[in-house]
Length: 321
Ligand SMILES: NC(=O)c1ccc[n+]([C@@H]2O[C@H](COP(=O)([O-])OP(=O)(O)OC[C@H]3O[C@@H](n4cnc5c(N)ncnc54)[C@H](OP(=O)(O)O)[C@@H]3O)[C@@H](O)[C@H]2O)c1
Image 1 (tube, rainbow, N blue to C red):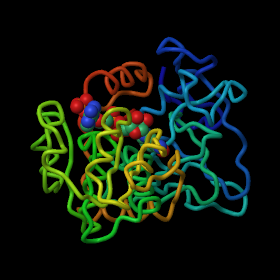
Image 2 (spheres, protein in one colour):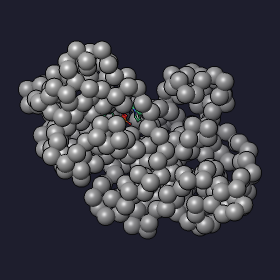
Image 3 (cartoon, helix red, strand yellow):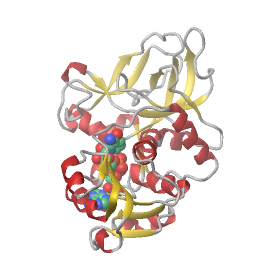
Image 4 (tube, rainbow, N blue to C red):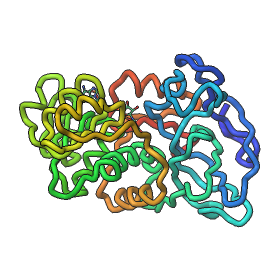
């Protein structure tokens, strides 16, 4: 069943978990749409993106969403069309095309989703709703990691791991836009793709050692953790900075004389997201969508994202996005 009754704004189909566990706990179910509070808007989802945090949440491995928060609707980012506006108006009018990175109190993988005041970002006609729904969390992770936490500046050098992934392929383009020199790691099949994003040096991480081509860097943007993160400390200059999307080892960083950022989670930031959407509209950032799945096929979408090494983003669609 899909969201066929376009007039019913009280019930949505949503990706929901009632218990923590493997893929078997992920189901698409009918949920009640809450009454809009003042300033909120209701969006008919066009696209919601798949992110690794989805299965971390489902497995109970995402600390901000513990057992007390069950049942949980998955999804942190979406695009769509505004279908209702709360009292006193909202960030957008009915019919407006919007995208958002939403807080953890709701889920984006829902045919109807409530946006809180300040969350909706207008999507110009030059940007497809598929791209606008694919990019918010990945882009805010790259933006906040490299710019807000890391302070990346023009003329600096950065090593970006996982450069063909959802976060990495946006990070490479944002770092180049900022004026940095980019060394990037990826699998052999993705090297040309990562070069096309603007990376100055591309390293096939399975067959080459990034330490052989990178040294004295200002920043490492780590999306891998573990051994990759440990080895990355040696390619930073003294006083350089490790920014990790996973757990940074602060003790090891200090031993190498480099700075790091304590564990952080990307946060909704509509102002920065609007800047990213403007960069996409201008053609400065190109978002790659590896594959699209209907919302009802969310388990297949997650399995694909986890196992098939996609380039860029995997998305869920609600109808024709
Ligand atoms: N802190 C936060 O707020 C935050 C936000 C977003 C994401 N994250 C985390 O950041 C990580 C990346 O997210 P994502 O959405 O970009 O995931 P993704 O789309 O799965 O991308 C990961 C990329 O890493 C590559 N890779 C795997 N092993 C590697 C290695 N040893 N060296 C270099 N690249 C390697 C993969 O390519 P191949 O396997 O094809 O080689 C893939 O392209 C996830 O763990 C996610 O949970 C954290």
